[in-house]
Length: 420
Image 1 (tube, rainbow, N blue to C red):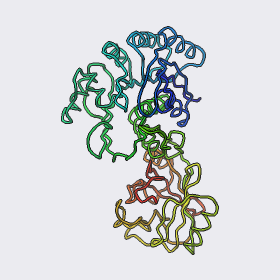
Image 2 (image 1 turned 120 degrees about the vertical axis):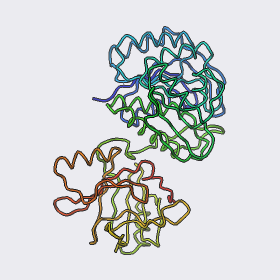
Image 3 (image 1 turned 90 degrees about the vertical axis):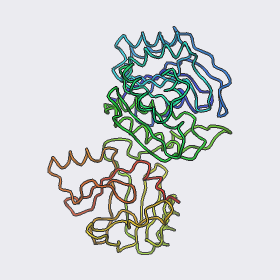
Image 4 (image 1 turned 45 degrees about the vertical axis):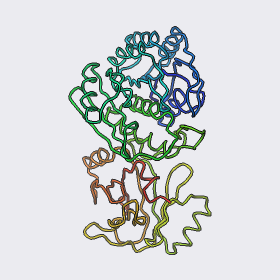
C-alpha cells in the first residue's frame, strides 16, 4: 500500500519551502502527501513579507478529516503559526490515529534568516518534540531549543544529546548553517551520536526549503517502513540531488529541484539505471548517442569512455575495448585519476576480458540486497567494495554468462566530480 504522510506546515507562496516543498518531496519518493495548512505566507526567494495564521480549530479539523478517512503512516510537522496551534496539534496527535512515526522540523528560523516563531511557540514545541520519533533542527534552531543564543562547534554533540534526553527523541542536527566547506549532519539520541554524515558543501544559492525537504523525506521513509538511520541517509541524498538539480529561479535563496530527482538509488530494490556498451570508434559512438538526444555527462576520449544521461536520469555508457586491466581485480578504473582536479577516470568495467555489454542494477541498500541474494545461493565474483570512482559495487554473471554489476552511487551516478 502507498505510504500516507500527513504534513502539518505552512504554505510558501513562492513554492520553495513549506507545504509546496513537502508535497513535491513525498510525491517524488513514492508516498501520498496529505496536508493540514497552519499558515499562509507571502514570501519569495528574497524573504518572508507577511504571515497569516490559519485558525487553530481549522488546522485540527484538516488533520482529523484526512486521518478518519485515509489514515496516516507518518506525520511531518513544520511551521505551526503560533503557540495555540502547536499545543492543539500535540493534543490531537496523542489520540493515536496518526501512526507512530512523527518527524518534527522546528521551523523557527528560515534559510533567509527570517524568524518564524515567537518565544511562546518555541516553548510549546517541547511537547511536540516529546511525541516525535526525530526532531530535525538546524544549528540556530538547536540553540533556540536549548535556550542559547548560539552553540560552539565543540558543544554541538553535548547540547544535542542533552536535548534528546530532555525530549526522549532522536535529534538530527543539520549542519548547513555551520562554517567551512564540509557539512556535518549528526543523528543523536540520549546515548550519544549514532550516525554522522560528512559531505562537501554544494555551491548554490538555491537552498530555500532544504529543511522542509529533508524532514518530509525522512517521514516518507519511515512511513515506507525504513529504520530511522537509512531513512535519514536516503533523505540526505534526496536533498543533495535536489540542490544539484535546482532550476535557479528568483533573485535570492531560490527553490530546489525536487521535481527533477530521478531514481538515484532512493529505494532499496533493484533498478536498471546504467548500461555500458562496447564501442570501436569513440568519436562515432559519441556523435551517434548525442544525435539520439542523450546528454553527454562524461567525456574521456583518452580512456575511451563516455557517459550519457536520458531525460529520466538513467545513464548509458560507451567504452572502447579492450578495457585496461587492473592488477588482481580484473578490469576497472585507474586509481590515479579519481580526484576532482585530475582527468576523468576510466569507468567501471566488465569484470571479464571479452567484449560485451555490462548491465548495472542500482540499489540504495546494496549490502543488504547482496547479503539477501548470497544467503539464497547467488554466487558473486566480487562482493560489495568501494571503488575509486565513488561507487560501491558487487559483480556477478547470469546463467548465460552476461555480466551484471550491482551498485550504489547516490549523487555520484549523475553528478560525479568529473561530470562535464
